[in-house]
Image 1 (cartoon, one colour):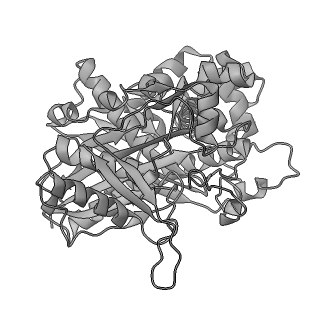
Image 2 (image 1 turned 180 degrees about the vertical axis):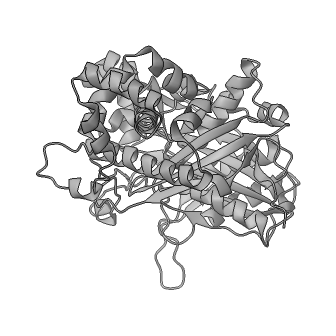
Amino acid sequence: MERKSIGISGLAAYTPPFRVWLEDWCQWTGNQWPKIREVVGRSFRVRGPNQSVYTMAATAVMRLINQYDIDPTRVKFLGLGTESSTDNSAGAIIVKGMVDQALIAQGKPPIARSCEVPEFKHACLGGVYGMKSAIRHLALDGAGGQAIVVCADIAEYARGSSGEPTQGAGAVAMLLEENPQLVEVDLVKSGSASDYRIMDFRKPMLRFCGQDRSESQQVQDFPVFNGKYSTTCYIDETLHALDDMYEKRGLQASDYLRSLKTVFMHRPYRRMPETGWAVAYLFALGSGSAEDRAELASFCYEAGIEPEALLAEMSSKPEIVQFADPERLNYEAYPLTMAVFKIFRASRRYRREILDKLALGSDTMLDLGNLYTAALPAWIAAGFEQAIDENRDLTGEELLTLGYGSGDAAEVIPFVVADGWREATAKIGFGQSMEFTVDLDEAQYAALHDGRRPANLDYLPRDEFVIDKIGRRDERQFQDVGIEYYKYIA
């Protein structure tokens, strides 16, 4: 049986308008702006007082339907990828209900009653798992229909924590179908990896005990995380997923990585994908030809490291879970590699093999912060729009995407750009979704962050969903305590 071409035909985004400039944040907190700019980015978004992960997700889906003139009755799969859901029972069905009401108000039919509505949770990888599930649906019982997967999250960290400058909020919706107009997603050639890492970015329910959210009802969802250990997990799982893809496709790693022009990765902050991709390149040199190893050795000698010792470390396959120990002073699983990486980062080749391949859309991402599940599709959307602006022809090009979710799992999936990508990209409107902003001062940011209503925050919602009210009845015959009621403001 001939394999169907299935992939993405459209993207649409919603980002809340409330923005914190990181240069301002550095002045408020005493942090060093040059370092934050280099490692993290320029700004991040904060959800508003009447917003939740569901309002952002539903707004992104409405934009997708309207921008691509989708017939809602053809949508038989609506998946929600998130780690910020606040309902432990329902998920994507909430988004479907909101969208249906807005569509009917616009005189359009609702999404098909026969639509599946799963939610996917695995840290920042939930949206990628949702996309894979949608593609499998379209290849089997959902053949001939359309699918929408929306990735939506609110990244919050405690004020004063190392994660605070990497906050963010937003949603990206994807339209998937046969004979896609933007990219074909080639799952057959993809690579996967997963391994339990105990304390690498977790959200135990115990964190919610004792929270007083009487003013806004917004639950603070600060994760339990360990920054250096999480970086090690990200790098290691990316390497394993790449190895799985290399083996499936019979690839020579160094030749393949050099052949790529564009790479999109999960991006919690600016430096993380650069580091992950650079380490993957060094590992590829280590398993490559004599010429590849000579290139690697040149970096080793400059770092004062014997090449043989580095190659031994690269083939060691450390058990990362052993690093989940509070008594450890060093969470580096590959210390020699990271020492060589510092030398590599200062080389001219680093620009060509790493930065240039991560360049499409990367400048736009400096103003988004961490969107968790939405970070990867947001970068892809920004990349396609930049390609249009620069009149770059991507037709037929293989793009490599790397998704990652703490906990710990990774997916490496090749995309092949479709002939109609220019027309599909013209409808994305990602840059437009970021245009309207409300810059926050220190007091306003602190209030929004802490779940209070800030003073002098002038913003009138338009073409988006908001929380209308929150239920408070807890009676024998009727209960709606804590349930959000929504409305669409046209």
